[in-house]
Length: 216
Image 1 (cartoon, rainbow, N blue to C red):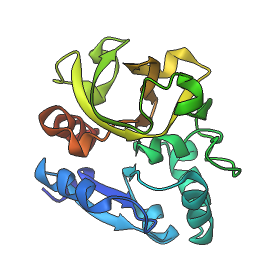
Image 2: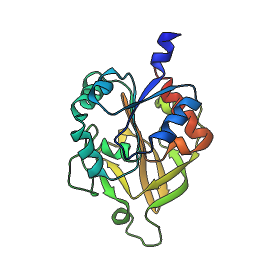
Image 3: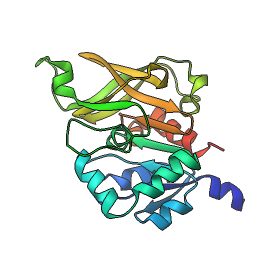
């Protein structure tokens, strides 16, 4: 039982600007254990990590550097290769950079975060994109452990003004259509990301979080 609890324990990175409460509640609801991590020592102990989202790109990167978390996160993501999931802003932080600011991102994946308004170039579509949208998987769900037992396609909840665009299309596992096709989730070995908020997306979002908790 002790080993199982450890495998289901998720370190939720707390930068003081993100919606950690809703994420931790969702983890606990599906049977996982959530702990807040705001020091490099707490990151180093983690076996799984979620980078939650809400806030601005540069502010998040500045806080990560001020808290001395970047090196510890890089080690976990790139060397130890533990499972890490980014949600909304957390998903964008995994990219090389964002048009929202000037600071480089974590650079774990070959993607650039762009302005949704500029990318759409169509005033008929509101920005930020807010509400429920259908996500279409562009790979079979069996190829991505996060989408096990998630009905295809599914609706998820979005709130965002920026979105990553991937250079390597093989990393993209799902898209939504909002004026144009948007890359809204990816999987790359131990790294996962969603532009939508699974913690606010009811049954299918909770299933996705459960699937992350259950990764061995």
